[in-house]
Image (cartoon, rainbow, N blue to C red):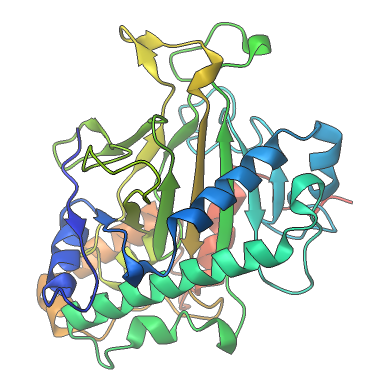
Length: 348
């Protein structure tokens, strides 16, 4: 089991910034203690999961009305069908065993179908609260790193100042569809990958495990759904937060963007094949403004503890960034990463 700390980021915890930094420099994952500080209630999370389940239960024809990357939905917005995304193309023989729906607040508004059709305001409100929580986390990182100014990260995520690649993603991982046949060893719910943006929030459901991280011990370690093990029924579970590639890049690798995946539940070492092992989750991928430049953050701590220039160049190569004498932007980086997972060419 992965050793991931649980942190209270309320103002009552004077050590929150330091604790966040320690977790981010260790394995890049941390649980946020659910309380009034997050701004997201247990009932709001439950309502969103109910909405997600209702949408994914709709007929394929209905979900296809808002297909991802269609001319109507736009880039990286809309419904993604089974095997439509391959997060680890080097190892996977077929795409991820999941469906997803990406929601963005960008104009023009994207089409919504089925159970989502009357729920645009609910989606917008939840996404807004997720973004506000990310800004709080980014502000704490600024404090911990002594950035100049302290809101250096926050300023680059101010959605009122421009467009951004941030999306709220609802995910459905079916237990094992009857038409799948025998699973190959490399078949997986979500292939091994690191996240593309700055900060990611993950909301999970009780009794629906599967997330693993590639730990500092150089092995896959499972991530608990409830790290406390005793969260009362009806209360919100801790929110899992992880560092994305951009935040790692800005800090010269000091903050870790850790590779992770979602596997099928196993029984006696083999994939379990009963329908009740469906997994639902929700993710908020927080991205910087599209024109935010991928340069080192002004921080003496990063200068002294971050990676060397050679490490930085290696990070560029690994993360799909290209030098070519120009400063890459967040949008350049996101387009390159998305292009490797599915065809970004808009469909009619």
